[in-house]
Length: 341
Ligand code: PMV
View 1 (cartoon, rainbow, N blue to C red):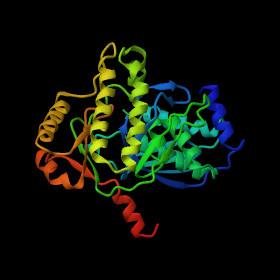
View 2 (tube, helix red, strand yellow):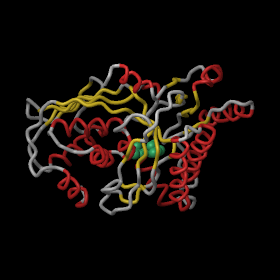
View 3 (tube, rainbow, N blue to C red):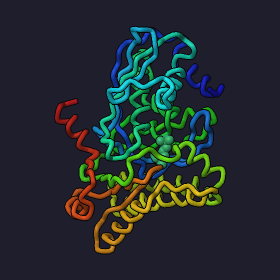
View 4 (cartoon, rainbow, N blue to C red):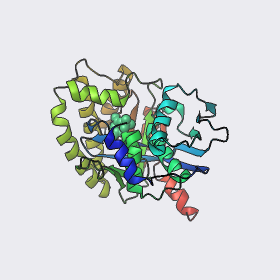
């Protein structure tokens, strides 16, 4: 743990935590429309640029933190207990230790992902966001959403954006201690907005996003231009979202994703998350666009392609890509609203 990280938790948490009580929390996954790629501080996990995402409603993680009745830290993922030396378990307890700061407060953690494995989406964003909320609840912490977003950010940058539904922006911030680097919701609903996942490869990724972005920052001659361009893109994206201007948003999201992948491809040695099948999906999309279809693509640190479009294009897209899984990000909110929540 870096000193700065220890200081951050000392400032946000009381000196002594109470014994944990059982607490369950949920957080949605998210897809960035304007990407985060590159850190300015590895210890505090601070980004070089702001990013903007859309949350995936009921696709996410539900996590329960409770006292360890047997006095031993344990973690279960999707119904299976993980051995303590498994990478995921190590990551989880390294994060829990930031809260405990040496105190003997063993916990049991049970987490379930509702994201279909076939969608091939990373669950670190929703996983660390749900874990942050569950730990805060279990230890009775009185923290604002912005503070919780800063804590989730330490687990995984994209997790900072998973504390809200709908469109969310993570402001990069400028302070060295990272206190202004957290996400905030963008107050707009857009019921016609759709995302579809075209599954290309659901296996584990070759390089984690953390390693991939560090390698890109360190070796890619194309990276120098990225932070400024990405910030400009993120600002424009926020405006397009607020205006519900899909004709501007779609092309910008696709250009931003391809620019990010271009910085990686120029890294030395080259880093390629996209597979020939990903490019085939893109080429088919570009052909359909020439024929008038308004759909655009975005890709993250993996081979799967995500399509962005409005409800009116749903039939056209399902006939081109019968295998897609379509998601309506605002369904979740209307379900909640109808229940009066
Ligand atoms: O914060 P991480 O390690 O999940 O990295 C996220 C990187 C991208 O998914 C490629 C971009 C983003 O903003 O989500």
